[in-house]
Image 1 (cartoon, rainbow, N blue to C red):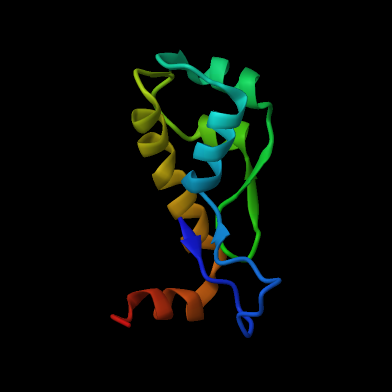
Image 2 (tube, helix red, strand yellow; image 1 turned 90 degrees about the vertical axis):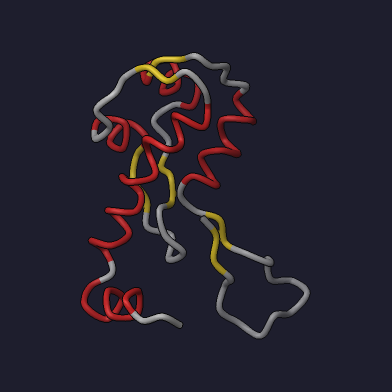
Length: 108
């Protein structure tokens, strides 16, 4: 997931703010995690680092996110990220309040 940051689009601003599985994917690559792997092996490789789950920078600890996933073994990185996506999505929806929910429901 990624979102364009607010602002005038100056040269010093990033093109996008990454969060959720996009950040986790990058951290997996940096840590050199190989699959198949267990949740504990991934946690050991990455540490219990905070992962931003929305464009506002709110975070969840990797361990807390993994505790919300029913499976504990992942055959590949895609399976791992797919299992964590609902956790990030749920946190994002819970944290936004009424206006965020309304905005998410609109088609534009």
